[in-house]
Image (cartoon, rainbow, N blue to C red):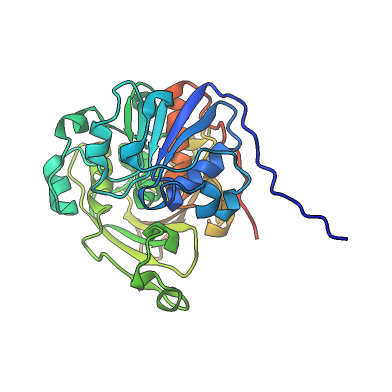
Amino acid sequence: MFVKCAVTKTQKPNKEVRIGVLGASGYTGSEIVRLLANHPHFGITLMTADKKAGQSIGSAFPHLVTQDLPDMVSVKDANFSDVDAVFCCLPHGTTQEIIKALPKGLKIVDLSADFRLQNISEYEEWYGQAHRAPDLQKEAVYGLTELLREEVKSARLVANPGCYPTSVQLPLVPLIKANLIEFRNIIIDAKSGVSGAGRGAKEANLYTEISEGIYSYGITRHRHVPEIEQGLSEAANSKITISFTPHLMPMNRGMQSTIYVEMAPGVTIDDLYHQLKISYEDEEFVVLLERGVVPRTHNVRGSNYCLMNVFPDRIPGRAIIVSVIDNLVKGASGQALQNLNVMMGYPENTGLLYLPLFP
């Protein structure tokens, strides 16, 4: 005798904050859905996905089949009357006009790069198109939560940081503000899992193209360069230019930035370590490891944590900083949820207390 078992969907009680997820069929959108599954206050009432309109989230992402959520619709058919806040997980270059047309009362966290650069001319230079919502850009707040929490708290529109800029700015900004490192000769060697390239079918991301190798890309022209330089320059009150080279790694998730810096005269490794310690000792998601412990991407997988440490270089006067995050969580959807928690007045760790998944 065989017993046929149906999938039991998780019923959601009515929650205080009604959430719309624009671009739910991409990796960052699916991560938002996963993280919100255990959020006591945020409930999804709208999901969009133009190419998968009419489908359930479980058909697009079978690992989410137990979630009892509305079917996805196209953006043009979306009804925002039952929405209080929006996560915008749409591709770069498509978001400005869509957000400009949204009801003014919505709280918005945009995970694209469309509102990250304060200088719209710089946006046009690096993204190859004119900014389509310059007035809205003036309103946007850059949402690196640990460093700009007060600004995020009162924002209506938050530009969620990119993954590489998150992993780089978290360790560097406190050291720059304390004048412990030189503003010149900052070298960043960064590595990311393939999910950072998105879910779209691309020849360069095929298994045979990615596996058993490392690929350097965007050399001197990666679009996260102006975002990193913007944040570091603000911290320094002076223009900072970096050397940044990203690499695509044969892994699904994870990001590591290895950063080489020149210490200011008279500064030691102990000074750098102490500054990072006092900067983040009260932060839940940024963890300075014990001296000598090397951060590993394995140890943040699926979580909103950033692990970091600082090491002496063999070259006198220089230091090596290693910072790791999950590119889809702290580098995208987790930080977005952290920001919306702050915007809505909830504890910012709500829905984010997932421990890293290992092995």
